[in-house]
Length: 454
Image 1 (cartoon, one colour):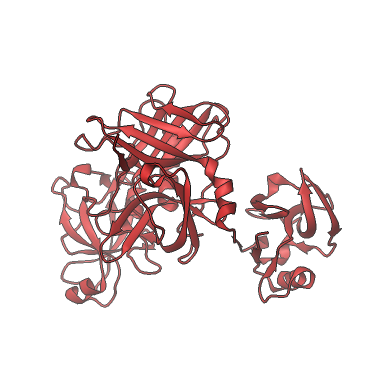
Image 2: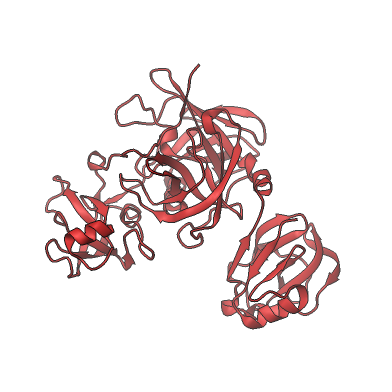
Protein backbone atom coordinates (compact mmCIF):
# COMPACT_ATOMS: atom_id res chain seq x y z
CA UNK A 1 0.00 0.00 0.00
CA UNK A 2 1.42 3.36 -0.96
CA UNK A 3 1.53 6.12 1.63
CA UNK A 4 -0.13 9.47 1.02
CA UNK A 5 1.01 12.65 2.76
CA UNK A 6 -1.47 15.54 2.88
CA UNK A 7 -0.33 19.06 3.70
CA UNK A 8 -2.81 21.68 4.97
CA UNK A 9 -2.53 25.41 5.51
CA UNK A 10 -4.73 25.95 8.51
CA UNK A 11 -3.54 24.79 11.99
CA UNK A 12 -7.10 24.09 13.14
CA UNK A 13 -7.62 21.71 10.26
CA UNK A 14 -4.31 20.02 11.03
CA UNK A 15 -5.25 19.58 14.70
CA UNK A 16 -8.59 17.97 13.85
CA UNK A 17 -7.01 15.59 11.38
CA UNK A 18 -4.21 14.65 13.76
CA UNK A 19 -6.79 13.80 16.40
CA UNK A 20 -8.35 11.25 14.08
CA UNK A 21 -5.72 9.66 11.87
CA UNK A 22 -2.26 10.81 12.77
CA UNK A 23 0.04 12.76 15.03
CA UNK A 24 2.79 14.27 12.88
CA UNK A 25 3.53 17.96 13.07
CA UNK A 26 1.91 19.91 10.20
CA UNK A 27 0.87 16.85 8.25
CA UNK A 28 -1.24 13.72 8.35
CA UNK A 29 0.10 10.43 7.06
CA UNK A 30 -1.93 7.26 6.77
CA UNK A 31 -2.21 4.33 4.41
CA UNK A 32 -6.01 4.20 4.62
CA UNK A 33 -7.59 7.60 4.05
CA UNK A 34 -10.12 9.14 1.71
CA UNK A 35 -10.47 12.90 1.41
CA UNK A 36 -13.46 14.07 -0.59
CA UNK A 37 -15.46 17.20 -1.32
CA UNK A 38 -19.04 17.01 -0.04
CA UNK A 39 -22.12 19.26 -0.13
CA UNK A 40 -24.33 19.27 2.95
CA UNK A 41 -24.88 15.79 4.35
CA UNK A 42 -25.17 14.04 0.98
CA UNK A 43 -22.85 11.01 0.92
CA UNK A 44 -22.40 10.89 -2.86
CA UNK A 45 -18.85 11.40 -4.16
CA UNK A 46 -19.17 14.50 -6.32
CA UNK A 47 -16.74 14.05 -9.19
CA UNK A 48 -17.79 17.34 -10.76
CA UNK A 49 -16.68 19.39 -7.76
CA UNK A 50 -13.29 17.83 -7.11
CA UNK A 51 -10.32 16.32 -8.88
CA UNK A 52 -9.14 12.80 -8.18
CA UNK A 53 -5.43 13.05 -7.51
CA UNK A 54 -4.63 9.39 -7.03
CA UNK A 55 -6.41 6.04 -6.81
CA UNK A 56 -4.29 3.31 -5.24
CA UNK A 57 -6.07 0.31 -3.71
CA UNK A 58 -8.46 1.85 -1.16
CA UNK A 59 -6.78 5.28 -1.23
CA UNK A 60 -8.39 8.23 -2.96
CA UNK A 61 -7.00 11.72 -2.53
CA UNK A 62 -9.25 14.45 -3.89
CA UNK A 63 -9.33 18.20 -3.69
CA UNK A 64 -11.34 20.82 -5.48
CA UNK A 65 -9.43 23.28 -7.61
CA UNK A 66 -11.28 25.69 -5.33
CA UNK A 67 -13.38 23.90 -2.74
CA UNK A 68 -16.69 25.73 -2.31
CA UNK A 69 -17.67 27.28 0.99
CA UNK A 70 -20.46 24.73 1.60
CA UNK A 71 -18.15 21.77 1.14
CA UNK A 72 -16.78 19.47 3.81
CA UNK A 73 -13.60 17.48 4.00
CA UNK A 74 -14.43 14.06 5.45
CA UNK A 75 -11.99 11.44 6.65
CA UNK A 76 -13.35 8.05 5.65
CA UNK A 77 -11.89 4.67 6.50
CA UNK A 78 -12.76 1.97 4.01
CA UNK A 79 -13.09 2.10 0.25
CA UNK A 80 -15.15 3.76 -2.44
CA UNK A 81 -17.31 1.70 -4.75
CA UNK A 82 -18.68 3.51 -7.80
CA UNK A 83 -19.82 6.97 -6.62
CA UNK A 84 -20.95 5.91 -3.13
CA UNK A 85 -19.15 5.39 0.14
CA UNK A 86 -18.70 2.00 1.74
CA UNK A 87 -16.75 1.30 4.88
CA UNK A 88 -17.10 0.48 8.51
CA UNK A 89 -16.25 3.85 9.99
CA UNK A 90 -17.12 7.32 8.66
CA UNK A 91 -15.83 10.01 10.98
CA UNK A 92 -18.45 12.59 11.88
CA UNK A 93 -16.00 15.28 12.95
CA UNK A 94 -15.88 17.17 9.68
CA UNK A 95 -13.40 19.82 8.66
CA UNK A 96 -15.08 22.55 6.67
CA UNK A 97 -13.36 24.13 3.69
CA UNK A 98 -13.46 27.60 5.24
CA UNK A 99 -11.23 26.35 8.06
CA UNK A 100 -8.40 26.14 5.54
CA UNK A 101 -6.60 29.11 4.10
CA UNK A 102 -8.64 30.21 1.10
CA UNK A 103 -10.78 27.12 1.51
CA UNK A 104 -8.26 25.04 -0.42
CA UNK A 105 -5.86 22.26 0.46
CA UNK A 106 -2.44 23.80 -0.06
CA UNK A 107 -0.69 20.90 -1.70
CA UNK A 108 -0.82 17.15 -2.01
CA UNK A 109 2.35 15.19 -2.56
CA UNK A 110 1.90 11.62 -3.69
CA UNK A 111 4.54 9.00 -3.05
CA UNK A 112 4.25 5.95 -5.28
CA UNK A 113 6.72 3.28 -6.23
CA UNK A 114 7.79 2.80 -9.83
CA UNK A 115 5.57 -0.20 -10.44
CA UNK A 116 2.46 1.80 -9.45
CA UNK A 117 3.33 4.61 -11.80
CA UNK A 118 4.36 2.27 -14.61
CA UNK A 119 1.09 0.34 -14.48
CA UNK A 120 -1.03 3.50 -14.67
CA UNK A 121 1.09 5.13 -17.38
CA UNK A 122 2.44 2.46 -19.72
CA UNK A 123 -0.62 2.30 -22.00
CA UNK A 124 -0.38 6.05 -22.60
CA UNK A 125 3.08 5.79 -24.24
CA UNK A 126 3.67 4.95 -27.92
CA UNK A 127 6.62 4.05 -30.12
CA UNK A 128 7.31 6.23 -33.18
CA UNK A 129 9.33 5.10 -36.21
CA UNK A 130 10.38 7.19 -39.20
CA UNK A 131 12.17 6.39 -42.48
CA UNK A 132 14.27 9.23 -43.81
CA UNK A 133 14.71 10.19 -47.46
CA UNK A 134 17.88 8.06 -47.66
CA UNK A 135 16.06 5.02 -46.25
CA UNK A 136 17.49 5.10 -42.73
CA UNK A 137 15.13 4.18 -39.88
CA UNK A 138 14.90 6.05 -36.55
CA UNK A 139 12.84 5.30 -33.44
CA UNK A 140 11.56 7.59 -30.69
CA UNK A 141 8.68 7.80 -28.22
CA UNK A 142 5.47 9.78 -27.75
CA UNK A 143 2.42 9.84 -25.48
CA UNK A 144 -1.34 10.40 -25.55
CA UNK A 145 -2.86 13.70 -24.41
CA UNK A 146 -6.36 15.17 -24.39
CA UNK A 147 -7.91 16.76 -27.48
CA UNK A 148 -11.33 17.43 -29.06
CA UNK A 149 -13.64 14.65 -30.28
CA UNK A 150 -11.72 11.89 -28.55
CA UNK A 151 -14.39 9.36 -29.45
CA UNK A 152 -12.91 9.46 -32.96
CA UNK A 153 -9.28 10.53 -32.48
CA UNK A 154 -6.16 9.99 -30.43
CA UNK A 155 -3.67 12.83 -29.86
CA UNK A 156 0.03 12.09 -29.54
CA UNK A 157 2.60 14.54 -28.24
CA UNK A 158 6.28 14.08 -29.07
CA UNK A 159 9.50 16.01 -29.63
CA UNK A 160 9.76 17.55 -33.08
CA UNK A 161 13.20 16.12 -33.67
CA UNK A 162 11.71 12.61 -33.44
CA UNK A 163 9.65 13.11 -36.60
CA UNK A 164 12.05 15.38 -38.50
CA UNK A 165 13.84 14.16 -41.61
CA UNK A 166 17.52 14.72 -40.83
CA UNK A 167 18.50 14.03 -44.46
CA UNK A 168 16.95 17.30 -45.65
CA UNK A 169 18.32 20.76 -44.90
CA UNK A 170 16.22 22.50 -42.26
CA UNK A 171 14.93 19.13 -40.99
CA UNK A 172 11.28 19.26 -42.14
CA UNK A 173 8.61 16.77 -41.11
CA UNK A 174 9.43 13.29 -42.36
CA UNK A 175 7.13 11.86 -45.02
CA UNK A 176 7.26 8.37 -43.49
CA UNK A 177 6.04 8.19 -39.89
CA UNK A 178 4.53 5.19 -38.12
CA UNK A 179 3.03 5.08 -34.62
CA UNK A 180 2.75 1.83 -32.68
CA UNK A 181 0.19 1.83 -29.86
CA UNK A 182 -0.18 -0.78 -27.14
CA UNK A 183 -3.64 0.38 -26.02
CA UNK A 184 -6.47 -0.20 -26.77
CA UNK A 185 -4.80 -2.58 -29.23
CA UNK A 186 -1.32 -3.32 -30.48
CA UNK A 187 -1.64 -1.52 -33.78
CA UNK A 188 0.45 0.54 -36.20
CA UNK A 189 -0.88 3.82 -37.61
CA UNK A 190 0.87 5.55 -40.53
CA UNK A 191 0.77 9.34 -40.71
CA UNK A 192 -0.77 9.84 -44.15
CA UNK A 193 -1.79 13.50 -44.13
CA UNK A 194 -5.50 12.73 -44.33
CA UNK A 195 -6.93 10.62 -41.50
CA UNK A 196 -3.67 10.54 -39.54
CA UNK A 197 -1.90 13.88 -39.47
CA UNK A 198 0.78 16.08 -37.94
CA UNK A 199 -1.27 18.90 -36.38
CA UNK A 200 1.60 21.04 -35.13
CA UNK A 201 5.38 21.14 -35.53
CA UNK A 202 7.87 23.53 -33.93
CA UNK A 203 11.53 22.68 -34.36
CA UNK A 204 12.76 25.43 -32.03
CA UNK A 205 10.74 24.54 -28.95
CA UNK A 206 10.91 20.84 -30.01
CA UNK A 207 7.16 20.27 -29.61
CA UNK A 208 4.97 18.36 -32.08
CA UNK A 209 1.44 17.03 -31.94
CA UNK A 210 -0.04 14.26 -34.11
CA UNK A 211 -3.59 12.96 -34.45
CA UNK A 212 -4.61 9.45 -35.39
CA UNK A 213 -8.08 8.29 -36.34
CA UNK A 214 -9.66 5.56 -34.23
CA UNK A 215 -11.51 4.78 -31.03
CA UNK A 216 -10.61 3.89 -27.47
CA UNK A 217 -7.74 6.36 -26.97
CA UNK A 218 -9.10 7.42 -23.59
CA UNK A 219 -5.97 6.78 -21.54
CA UNK A 220 -4.18 10.13 -21.61
CA UNK A 221 -1.72 12.09 -19.51
CA UNK A 222 -2.79 15.23 -17.69
CA UNK A 223 -0.36 18.11 -17.25
CA UNK A 224 1.41 19.47 -14.19
CA UNK A 225 2.78 23.03 -14.12
CA UNK A 226 6.55 22.51 -14.21
CA UNK A 227 7.43 26.04 -13.15
CA UNK A 228 5.00 26.53 -10.26
CA UNK A 229 4.05 23.04 -9.04
CA UNK A 230 7.33 21.12 -9.47
CA UNK A 231 10.31 21.53 -7.16
CA UNK A 232 13.99 20.78 -7.47
CA UNK A 233 14.56 17.43 -5.77
CA UNK A 234 11.12 16.03 -6.64
CA UNK A 235 11.09 12.50 -8.01
CA UNK A 236 10.57 12.20 -11.76
CA UNK A 237 10.13 9.27 -14.15
CA UNK A 238 10.24 8.53 -17.85
CA UNK A 239 8.70 5.72 -19.88
CA UNK A 240 9.73 5.09 -23.47
CA UNK A 241 11.76 3.05 -25.93
CA UNK A 242 15.47 3.50 -25.15
CA UNK A 243 17.53 2.02 -27.93
CA UNK A 244 14.35 1.65 -29.93
CA UNK A 245 13.88 -1.92 -28.77
CA UNK A 246 13.39 -1.83 -24.97
CA UNK A 247 9.60 -1.76 -24.96
CA UNK A 248 8.28 0.93 -22.63
CA UNK A 249 10.84 0.59 -19.87
CA UNK A 250 10.74 2.98 -16.91
CA UNK A 251 13.57 5.05 -15.44
CA UNK A 252 13.43 7.07 -12.23
CA UNK A 253 15.42 9.97 -10.83
CA UNK A 254 15.05 13.47 -9.44
CA UNK A 255 14.49 16.95 -10.82
CA UNK A 256 17.81 18.80 -10.95
CA UNK A 257 16.25 21.98 -12.34
CA UNK A 258 12.61 22.72 -13.19
CA UNK A 259 13.14 25.81 -15.37
CA UNK A 260 16.56 25.53 -16.94
CA UNK A 261 17.61 27.25 -20.14
CA UNK A 262 20.95 25.80 -21.11
CA UNK A 263 23.40 27.37 -23.53
CA UNK A 264 23.11 26.37 -27.17
CA UNK A 265 19.51 27.54 -27.53
CA UNK A 266 17.90 24.71 -25.55
CA UNK A 267 14.41 25.78 -24.43
CA UNK A 268 12.98 26.02 -20.88
CA UNK A 269 13.45 22.50 -19.70
CA UNK A 270 13.35 19.99 -16.88
CA UNK A 271 16.87 18.77 -16.13
CA UNK A 272 17.05 15.34 -14.51
CA UNK A 273 19.59 12.75 -13.45
CA UNK A 274 17.61 10.03 -15.25
CA UNK A 275 19.68 8.20 -17.85
CA UNK A 276 18.13 9.12 -21.20
CA UNK A 277 19.08 7.36 -24.41
CA UNK A 278 18.20 7.62 -28.08
CA UNK A 279 14.69 6.22 -28.38
CA UNK A 280 13.53 7.93 -25.16
CA UNK A 281 13.22 11.16 -27.16
CA UNK A 282 9.64 12.42 -27.29
CA UNK A 283 8.53 10.38 -24.30
CA UNK A 284 6.97 11.82 -21.13
CA UNK A 285 8.74 13.08 -18.02
CA UNK A 286 6.24 12.11 -15.33
CA UNK A 287 5.79 13.44 -11.80
CA UNK A 288 4.87 11.04 -9.03
CA UNK A 289 1.20 11.97 -9.24
CA UNK A 290 1.17 10.58 -12.80
CA UNK A 291 1.05 13.95 -14.56
CA UNK A 292 3.42 15.02 -17.33
CA UNK A 293 5.90 17.82 -16.62
CA UNK A 294 8.13 17.48 -19.68
CA UNK A 295 8.84 15.99 -23.11
CA UNK A 296 12.19 14.16 -23.33
CA UNK A 297 14.32 16.25 -25.67
CA UNK A 298 18.08 16.05 -25.17
CA UNK A 299 21.06 14.45 -23.51
CA UNK A 300 24.58 15.76 -23.08
CA UNK A 301 27.76 14.32 -21.62
CA UNK A 302 30.86 16.38 -21.00
CA UNK A 303 32.16 16.45 -17.43
CA UNK A 304 28.75 15.29 -16.26
CA UNK A 305 25.62 13.83 -17.81
CA UNK A 306 22.87 16.39 -18.41
CA UNK A 307 19.52 15.07 -19.60
CA UNK A 308 16.17 16.73 -19.88
CA UNK A 309 13.12 17.77 -21.81
CA UNK A 310 10.80 20.60 -22.76
CA UNK A 311 9.05 21.88 -19.62
CA UNK A 312 5.24 21.75 -19.51
CA UNK A 313 5.10 25.47 -18.66
CA UNK A 314 6.46 26.05 -22.17
CA UNK A 315 4.88 23.26 -24.22
CA UNK A 316 1.31 23.33 -22.80
CA UNK A 317 0.39 26.71 -24.39
CA UNK A 318 1.91 25.52 -27.68
CA UNK A 319 -0.16 22.32 -27.64
CA UNK A 320 -3.29 24.30 -26.78
CA UNK A 321 -2.59 26.53 -29.79
CA UNK A 322 -2.21 23.53 -32.10
CA UNK A 323 -5.53 22.11 -30.90
CA UNK A 324 -7.45 25.38 -31.18
CA UNK A 325 -6.00 26.61 -34.49
CA UNK A 326 -5.76 23.44 -36.57
CA UNK A 327 -7.95 23.22 -39.67
CA UNK A 328 -5.80 21.83 -42.49
CA UNK A 329 -2.08 21.46 -43.01
CA UNK A 330 0.35 21.70 -40.10
CA UNK A 331 0.16 24.55 -37.60
CA UNK A 332 3.26 26.51 -36.56
CA UNK A 333 3.34 28.40 -33.28
CA UNK A 334 3.73 32.20 -33.86
CA UNK A 335 6.87 32.96 -31.85
CA UNK A 336 7.90 36.44 -30.80
CA UNK A 337 11.46 37.60 -31.49
CA UNK A 338 13.80 40.21 -30.02
CA UNK A 339 16.24 40.05 -32.93
CA UNK A 340 19.16 39.02 -30.74
CA UNK A 341 21.34 36.11 -29.79
CA UNK A 342 22.00 35.97 -26.09
CA UNK A 343 23.54 33.97 -23.26
CA UNK A 344 22.94 33.88 -19.53
CA UNK A 345 24.98 35.99 -17.13
CA UNK A 346 27.17 33.68 -15.04
CA UNK A 347 29.46 34.60 -12.17
CA UNK A 348 32.49 34.91 -14.51
CA UNK A 349 30.43 37.09 -16.86
CA UNK A 350 29.36 39.33 -13.98
CA UNK A 351 32.99 39.70 -12.89
CA UNK A 352 34.14 40.53 -16.42
CA UNK A 353 31.38 43.13 -16.87
CA UNK A 354 31.97 44.51 -13.38
CA UNK A 355 28.33 44.18 -12.31
CA UNK A 356 27.10 43.46 -8.81
CA UNK A 357 24.51 40.76 -9.54
CA UNK A 358 24.39 37.42 -11.33
CA UNK A 359 21.20 37.92 -13.28
CA UNK A 360 19.80 38.35 -16.75
CA UNK A 361 20.97 37.54 -20.28
CA UNK A 362 23.54 39.53 -22.23
CA UNK A 363 23.28 40.25 -25.96
CA UNK A 364 25.89 38.36 -28.01
CA UNK A 365 24.94 39.56 -31.49
CA UNK A 366 22.15 41.25 -33.45
CA UNK A 367 19.98 40.06 -36.32
CA UNK A 368 20.87 42.50 -39.07
CA UNK A 369 17.44 42.09 -40.67
CA UNK A 370 15.75 43.76 -37.68
CA UNK A 371 16.03 47.53 -38.08
CA UNK A 372 16.27 49.53 -35.99
CA UNK A 373 17.81 47.15 -33.48
CA UNK A 374 16.04 47.00 -30.13
CA UNK A 375 19.24 46.42 -28.16
CA UNK A 376 23.01 46.73 -28.42
CA UNK A 377 25.66 44.05 -28.05
CA UNK A 378 26.49 43.49 -24.33
CA UNK A 379 23.21 44.96 -23.09
CA UNK A 380 21.91 42.77 -20.24
CA UNK A 381 18.16 42.00 -20.19
CA UNK A 382 16.95 41.45 -16.62
CA UNK A 383 13.14 41.50 -16.68
CA UNK A 384 10.20 41.00 -19.06
CA UNK A 385 6.72 42.15 -17.99
CA UNK A 386 7.60 41.85 -14.32
CA UNK A 387 9.29 38.42 -14.60
CA UNK A 388 12.97 38.43 -13.64
CA UNK A 389 15.00 36.46 -16.19
CA UNK A 390 18.23 34.52 -15.67
CA UNK A 391 19.41 31.16 -14.41
CA UNK A 392 19.41 31.52 -10.62
CA UNK A 393 16.51 31.03 -8.18
CA UNK A 394 13.54 33.33 -8.78
CA UNK A 395 14.76 34.02 -12.32
CA UNK A 396 13.19 32.47 -15.40
CA UNK A 397 14.24 31.68 -18.99
CA UNK A 398 14.13 34.57 -21.45
CA UNK A 399 13.32 32.03 -24.18
CA UNK A 400 9.87 31.33 -22.70
CA UNK A 401 9.01 34.94 -21.90
CA UNK A 402 9.69 35.91 -25.52
CA UNK A 403 8.74 32.87 -27.59
CA UNK A 404 5.33 32.33 -25.99
CA UNK A 405 4.27 35.85 -26.95
CA UNK A 406 3.19 36.35 -30.59
CA UNK A 407 4.82 38.84 -32.96
CA UNK A 408 3.41 42.35 -32.55
CA UNK A 409 3.13 42.01 -28.77
CA UNK A 410 4.55 44.98 -26.87
CA UNK A 411 6.47 44.01 -23.75
CA UNK A 412 8.04 46.01 -20.95
CA UNK A 413 11.75 45.20 -20.64
CA UNK A 414 14.23 46.11 -17.93
CA UNK A 415 17.86 46.05 -19.01
CA UNK A 416 21.37 47.17 -18.10
CA UNK A 417 22.85 49.10 -21.05
CA UNK A 418 26.30 48.28 -22.40
CA UNK A 419 28.96 50.16 -20.42
CA UNK A 420 26.51 51.20 -17.67
CA UNK A 421 25.82 47.74 -16.31
CA UNK A 422 25.00 48.82 -12.76
CA UNK A 423 22.17 51.02 -14.05
CA UNK A 424 18.83 49.38 -14.83
CA UNK A 425 16.64 51.08 -17.43
CA UNK A 426 13.13 50.32 -18.72
CA UNK A 427 11.65 50.50 -22.20
CA UNK A 428 8.75 49.06 -24.20
CA UNK A 429 9.66 46.75 -27.06
CA UNK A 430 7.41 45.34 -29.81
CA UNK A 431 8.28 41.77 -30.74
CA UNK A 432 9.22 40.92 -34.32
CA UNK A 433 8.46 37.69 -36.20
CA UNK A 434 10.85 34.90 -35.33
CA UNK A 435 13.67 34.43 -37.82
CA UNK A 436 14.70 30.76 -37.88
CA UNK A 437 17.78 31.55 -40.00
CA UNK A 438 19.30 33.44 -37.08
CA UNK A 439 18.45 30.92 -34.37
CA UNK A 440 20.95 29.27 -32.08
CA UNK A 441 22.57 26.07 -33.17
CA UNK A 442 21.69 23.17 -30.91
CA UNK A 443 25.32 22.74 -29.88
CA UNK A 444 26.37 19.41 -28.32
CA UNK A 445 22.99 18.64 -26.78
CA UNK A 446 21.82 15.48 -28.50
CA UNK A 447 18.39 15.91 -30.02
CA UNK A 448 17.91 12.83 -32.12
CA UNK A 449 15.96 9.61 -32.24
CA UNK A 450 17.87 6.31 -32.24
CA UNK A 451 18.97 5.01 -35.62
CA UNK A 452 18.00 1.40 -36.31
CA UNK A 453 20.29 -0.68 -38.53
CA UNK A 454 18.45 -3.29 -40.57
